[in-house]
Amino acid sequence: MVGSRSRTRLALLAAGVAVLAATGVVAASGAASADSVVNVHYAVTGTTYLAKLNTTANLGSGALASTVDLTTGTSQSTLTLPSTAVSVKEFGFVPVTATTELIQNGPAAGTVNFSTNTITSTANVTLKLTNLTIFGVSLPVGDKCQTTPFNIGISSGPGFTVSGGGPVTGTYTIPAFHDCGLNTLLLNLTIPGAGNTLNLDLGPLQLG
Image (cartoon, rainbow, N blue to C red; front, side):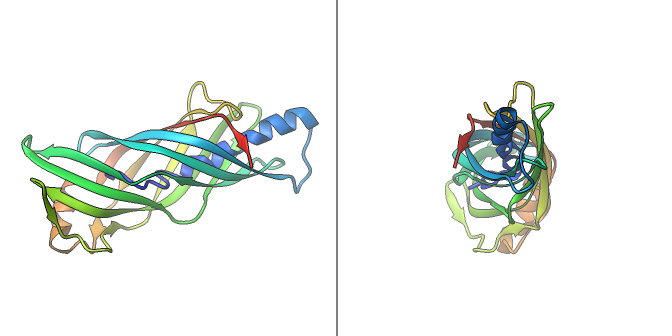
């Protein structure tokens, strides 16, 4: 997975965090009615480690929008991040740059545990490659160069709080690319595989 408008990079983790509003509201009111649903959002920054490329890509700054049920602790979220270009040197000397978008296939589904102040979430995404250059020369990949859909699961880490945000991490496996023309084989030799990690940092919860 190279970079991505990363709209979701992972969008998956957003779902759970959104529930943070719940913590504050539940603590103040004592209980929430079955139809108590709030909209919240967070500022998000993050990185992703791409195992096959042995490199870390900066995902830039984005936003996470979530809808949270304060009674059940369930949430649905969408994470939006800018496109990301990842540059590496294949074989130690061949400069390769790839620009990708991580497309979220519908809202990420998550849950929040109010007693432990933690969240988990899972998003279904597709990694699309929009540009590929080698030695500065642009190689055609077409407008349908992407992986099959795959899931990314995330959970909150040490120091995270629903109201204050904090670290959210996860791991994922990138499936094979298809419809990338003559460069399909090259991409599948250098990007897909397991052991990729996602590290996001969520800012304080904001209502609305």
